[in-house]
Length: 551
Image 1 (tube, rainbow, N blue to C red):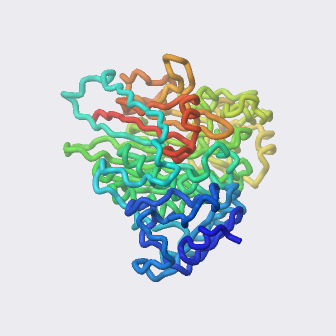
Image 2 (cartoon, one colour):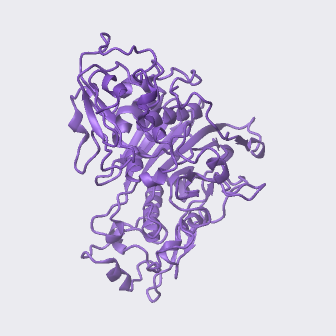
């Protein structure tokens, strides 16, 4: 027997604790979902606090403005779907009505009424006409009436370090890198969020927080990771386009439900090139993973008519597996080779580069060191040490020399070889490739393959990764099992930049770092119950930086 108040909620809505079901409501459903801001509903269906003996009337979970009567004449005539989630957030038993399956295409819902789709349409989102519009997204249910505990992040201004730009032509712009946490991945890895209050994990709660945060930062360029494809197409992309962004998206290969997006303001940039990057290679055993990258070439819009340099913006999400540093390095090498192809200008120089993403590597790790210095000597290094994610690395196999097979067509300088140098070879295992002694990588045919990686970019990190006053590490992701830094914004620093890193042997146009949004310590994050929480709806913090380009 259901509790009394559940028997009357929403007409003929039915539910049972501990069971997940997409329930067809023969009664009628509100014209606008709760998170559009048209009214103030309860944040969630309070199945984890059922005390029917203390409740003398039904819960108004559609909102306080809805009378507790069985029919609502102002509702549209269509039936709607209500998803009632499982307590344990088990993905197998708590799937959304349409959870992405292998081989499932977005065309499955073409022509289907929005009222029967699993998520509300983006057209129902209330898009503020200008930044600074009063906040209307945060619900005001019984669990959110109290003011949320918030740890404020401060803006760190480095403008005083830059040269006087009064007499120079400059272009200032801001960049965000943000892993927004795919809902499917959240549900598939529910053990990482055992510390969270369950209502804060619902997508209908998380989406408004994420969109509001992106709007408030008001960045010129957004680099987003773990963007679930159906959410992107139906909700995120239309919302950002209404705010003046143009969006590019690359889904992960295979059956993975998420991908990376780069969005930029059309009043600040022209789009010159879009380059999707897939790391999967069918005939190479080392590259059997579905991670991807995305590279855009953007032309700044200025009041000066003369030619100005383009900016290369790259976004990626490397493999997570801490024990497969060989795969991470190979994926990174592919991305750097693709950047080289599109960012190189005359005289062997490169246009300014901004490289964002979730690299699944900690500061000071060999992979992080390679990005910043442009060189990595890896002979004798175990694959578990490459990313530094684990204190006691479990991957003990030594990195092979070379790391990837010659058939990939990328040399040790992370540059594509000319096609005539890449010979067609029969498909072989990685072990067979490493046993073969080849002199293609070096100028001298009597020497072994060089055990060092190189790249031509002088990349600096926006963040210092440690707080100078306390020495405490900065944190970009925090969940039940760890709190570390894995997200970065790298950029090609100008010659006069204080943070410029050594290691570049080819000159390039550079950027000056004018400011950044500060990060937090692990103690700060746990003071608000880690991530996600009531106000931060991802398990990652957003990164925000401001740059200056001299024209």
